Image (cartoon, rainbow over all chains, first blue to last red; front, side, top):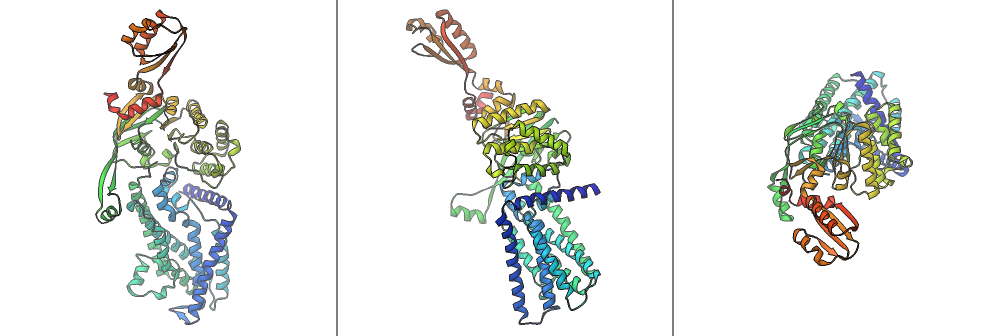
Length: 266
Length: 330
């Protein structure tokens, strides 16, 4: 088990180096990727600044809370971009064109390879900037944030990341059943938008759905709550259960999907 | 790693629709499916170190067979046993011992030099650094691509790209290599280099090769044994030369007389054999036994200025075979 973990970490590092080598072949593309992120984050900050110029709070989230919430949103988004965006988003195309053959022929866990083959290396820069921004915002936050909050936040953020991976993976692998489901990437992208708004705006049945079947609230809002208001064992426990359910389901669906794989003709 | 294939079948469910917009609308609401039998009851044994040619027209089932043998597809029925592995279970130990090169698909990354993809393969296949360096050096020298290693794949010619694909496929020293149309689109020089390489590599390492190709010269140069598939069914499994002889046992004779023969001299032969006479040249296409008799009689009539015997072009022979394969195998 330990050997296996070590092997896959080392393999991921090789995939990262390989991706970085490829990304750096095209300077403009590499720098453009950074620039696009800056524009995207800037627009989001501007959008929420406008909202808070009219209201003092949305639910429990005050303006300074929302600014931290936004940084956590961007951090989650960047983590997702860094690890998965170059992979799951393309699964349908790989399947339709038969490129998936080369993933399946490698002596590596096939789900690992389709999930991590291409790492968007330029996202590292955004990750570093956002992490610094988050720390500096929390340092000047009106209430002190103890280290325990940070520790629980990192765990919660990781669980949210696994949940998002599970959701996206399950949507992407539907292409095995539909033969061609090129909208899967965009569908996931649109669903993810529910996670980029503070959870206080969701109420009633819809809130329950976003906490379970489409657990978008668990991805950003819960980690932010834990960071600002302290660890909540109920939320953490629920995140853990949902993460496990989605991870196990992703595994089952992948195996069933492979049984249906027809591989494109040569 | 011997390969045992037993009653292997693969069916696909395809949806059918009529052409045009109305057909698209109808099929959108009422989709009709039909079963396509890509492979039916294929049985086949391949021994270690063999080079087997898999022949068939487009859509005959060659690639489907290859994809089943490497575990990309699950069969509808039947078994495959490769050294006690079932390919579609995709065990790591099995995947480390096989390799596939598809002439129409690339495993190398387009935007970076092939050497970067090789490095990644070293990690994926867990090849020791010294062993990796040794094998890479050997393969690069054999295929004469030393100067192209650090050139982006997209800047390579088709032939160079195929050589790099072959290197990527062989770095981990697989026991079985499946080459699906490895010379497609290549010029004759590159085709011939790849053939020579495969032959050498097979002799040197005893690697089993399964090759599909529409270029009969590939098959003729590399494969003693061929497996012919027609409409998903096994049609022939045996010696390639025997198949050629069975399909077209004729050979070409050109007999040059030292001077123009008088017509009376050849009258009796004309009743017995079919040939064409032009100036001093007599040309005939006959089965071996008839040719021997004709040549014997020609020698009795006159001593030749020159004589040549040729096999018929193998491409032509196979074309006539595939036009009506059952006819030749009854």
